[in-house]
Image (cartoon, rainbow, N blue to C red; front, side, top):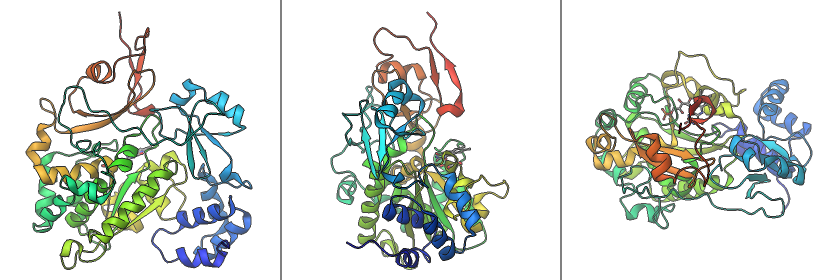
Length: 434
Ligand SMILES: Cc1cc2nc3c(=O)[nH]c(=O)nc-3n(C[C@H](O)[C@H](O)[C@H](O)COP(=O)(O)O)c2cc1C
């Protein structure tokens, strides 16, 4: 097939929402890199000054200004992979290092074109699906991982087998205010790090002036050692979609974006399929679920490799095609988010928790936590541990129980020297003393 002409790519993307990232990706996919001619053409097409565009493009790790750069191997240089031999692989493949690619629960990931290959030896690299979260040994009730291990869960048919989209049906016959009240009562708090109460955030967006309102799913998880959102999106994508559509109902938003980190190309395909399925079933688009006037369109925007884009202000600037610097706050995204209009930004896990809360109630969600604590948290475990992977823990579970009883403890003959919490931003906890 003849490659698409410049004008065709520009015409296709120019009037779409948040067009810069997908347009840059389209040129890079076509040419294998971003040439100066390509940048001039995009600069003209989107009316972005060339110098500004150059600064933005070169900020991202995975936009290549080197001929055929897209197809050159990039090896994960994250802290966990370094222990497994990143240096050797870099040398053997004559590759470039890349920041943590979110596959810390297995061998080293190597990105080549749009493929993620996994392995510790240059002659033994292969594509491997992300590991499924293991069930916890105590049979403790889960929220976001409760159905993730079911066969075919990533399809709408599989999702519907255990009540998929029932929460939306239930919410649509009730008022947006009651949905916000339910989420507030559940004490669900943001799972992207800052722990802001989700119901409060939605209430602020619902009450803010200005339209259209936007729902953004932050799927940029770039914190080294963090790979929980990948598992949720790979195996249960409709849960996040349903959570986003519920957020749209609660706030009056009519458009949404999933900002997906570049390093998850397979997840991109899974999400595209899920969105098509949801659209066909009438859960996206116009008059959703048969409710006149409830319209919500959802778009995926693929990042290009920049840790800071996980921070919501940077993420919004990135979506808007600006240099992805954090924004000064206030104002906050709830009033001045995407295109300066009211916007919900929530993490993947936060959205995925919403349908079960609507199905089972606020008290149920609260009661999943231990003692005074409400709810659960998906935790990614990696490093020198017997069973690395994602675990959904009740809030209040002692770390020792997670490390030893759930994940099998340290490797044979070793003891735990230190635990890094919440990625590198979280510092270290000292290990066990004899
Ligand atoms: C440097 C930095 C990186 C961040 N990275 C992420 C991230 O990868 N994913 C995420 O959901 N939130 C991340 N956050 C938090 C977001 O700014 C924001 O608070 C969050 O997406 C809101 O969603 P929540 O309320 O559901 O947690 C980051 C924040 C900072 C300061």
